[in-house]
Image (cartoon, rainbow, N blue to C red; front, side, top):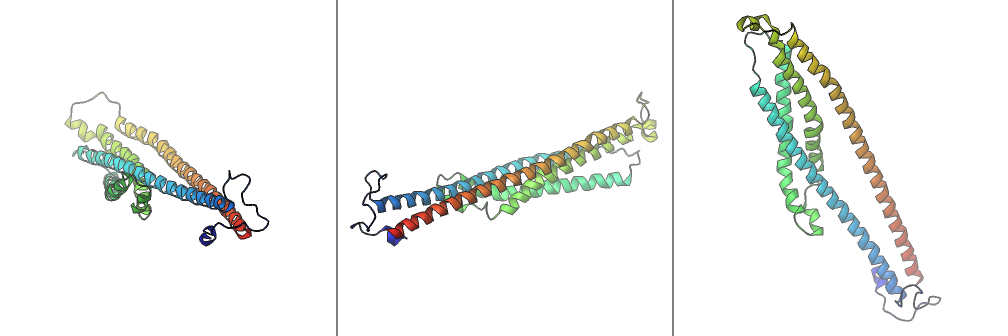
Length: 258
């Protein structure tokens, strides 16, 4: 096609006027060539805009996951250190094991998400601060897309769900030995009602269960809406590319007739 666009300006082909009526005095071949270049450049800029949008989205996800992971893992560590176990009270074995496992998994999940964010974010930041449209290809966000999504899912969905479970287990460990006979014999008598600690722990569990269900429903609904939005955007981009292809095919036929 480029060889046809660079045809020397000579006498027009039979049946084709030398100047198109709506080109403002421009030769017909120049007008077709300029239209073709405008279409190609507009398509190129749209692809670049999509790449930069993905770059900024990946950077925002990495920043959010790093902040969330650092905050929640710090809270989990403080909760485990500051939790005072009563030596006089015989805690249920399942409760202690569940608290230990939940705290360890929570910290490990958030630290893994923080590790991914710390390793990938500087490379993405270095490219995003360069004011050059063609530098987006130097960013590793496309190749590391699965790791970025993994860190985002660990710090938001799985990490927050584990943190809710951590709060419930911490309430049971904190309030359960309040009314035990061993602790009561070692301390002055209180005016608390019987089984008040057990009731407090149960109340926190009753409150946290619907909160966890709402969190799961919102997470599923959010990701489904996000996937639906991306699907619609891909359909629109495919339709735009199809329109550009039809226009380019029409220009090719015009060049062949010339």
